[in-house]
Image (tube, rainbow, N blue to C red; front, side, top):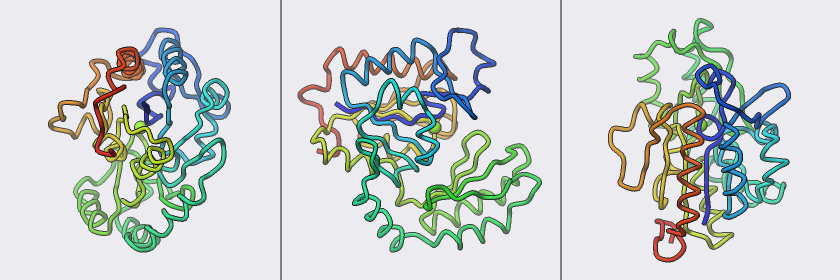
Length: 274
Ligand SMILES: [Mg+2]
């Protein structure tokens, strides 16, 4: 059984979320930046990672992923999906075969990054968007001031980008421009092929997590973020948490532990990967 989960705003949370939480927390990322889980959530994740295959699936670059020291020191996941699915790390080493496949897909199926940036520059201004940064050579993101975004222009850019096979995602203070071919599902499919384990529980909070959640046995969505705001109805096997913020992370992990203990996925249920 695999637990494939997004990290930021699903399992770990920046200090902004601490303001609305007064319980005990564990710093999952320390150093220049900090991210937190509830103490209980950290214990639950440790339990899960000891019982089934926990695969972190993050939009963070490899460098940003390695900063989450709780994962690197206490959990040491065998597989990790970073860069929104552009990189798969196995045993601490980047899977170059997979990365080559990603590059081929990009060259053939998506508009070139510089063309997308050029179009974005037509609506972006210093008023609401800091300069775009390239992430692991495959996608772009910038810090934005949400309240000042020209919504109509952005909506029309999103439509244009969709036609170029690019996805625009707004997550907190960041706006992402990501080629559609790059997604966490493609990398997870490779993990499934490598392990032969097709039973998947997934969790995520943003539009970029949508491909990851589709077709798994169980999917969890926290009651905050892009998916929560935009999804109108959920498939039967998708579960929305009751709580939001750090407690949503804990609630997801409690539910996963329940599934692990019940062994509900041990025998008969198969995801679309089968
Ligand atoms: Mg997230």
